[in-house]
Image (cartoon, rainbow, N blue to C red; front, side, top):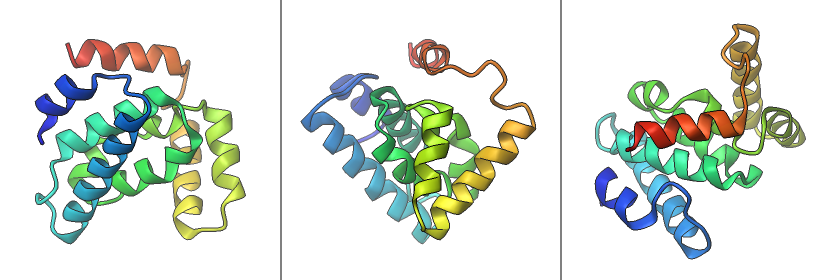
Length: 136
């Protein structure tokens, strides 16, 4: 499945079993991209992250982080803001609760990006609207 087909099949706001399929796709392409840069479809990975962002579940934060951290290309394609579908404060609190090195790394990057101004005037609704315009 590619980006176009995923967008057609699930839209930007999937729910229920469709979210499970989006998670599976993202995990599969993250695994491929980690194996060798370019093996995963980073555009599809970004779309999956947007779809999960729109769902707003904090349980998806580490899945999105793993995708972002899969390669340099994925890191550039997947915006740090996509970790924050459940809000910036909620995401920070969620990551703080985990005792995993990847959660600490995600939190550290999030804090650095916030200090650099990357979250100035951030809101979930505004970013969701930006992605809706991007995928039209």
